Image 1 (cartoon, helix red, strand yellow):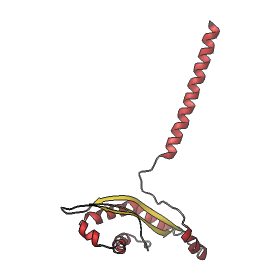
Image 2: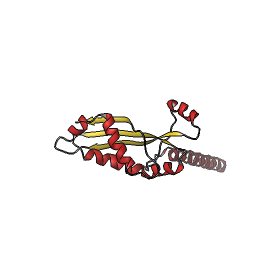
Image 3: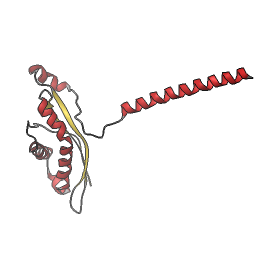
Image 4: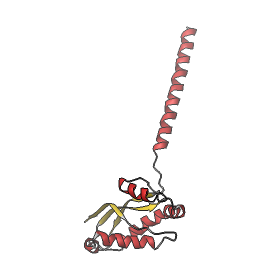
Length: 160
């Protein structure tokens, strides 16, 4: 009887150790998949930029993305604007890259404020290029160490 108790105690101990190991592995996997709440510059390379980088190796073009922004337009017939804004920048320019990183949340707020200050009819009448120019001017007015040259809309939807 003592042998059975010892064997079951050893098996129970092994089971506890295996469960603890599985738990630790699961927790580590979840931590590596957590998404930061802070805005960050999302960098990726694009095939179109390869030739530009080859011409000027000192430039390293990357893209900064503000993520998806939702804003409600003003007025009685308000609409919901859903927009994702990205822009290229030279990541070799470290001071400018740091300034962009520091201002990403501010750019998100400026974008929201811009659409919340317009009515849906005005936004419908604007061309994409006029909208890009308006947002570009707004962003660049906040920058001190460089300028953003171009904006890209990966999403742009106006829902009535």
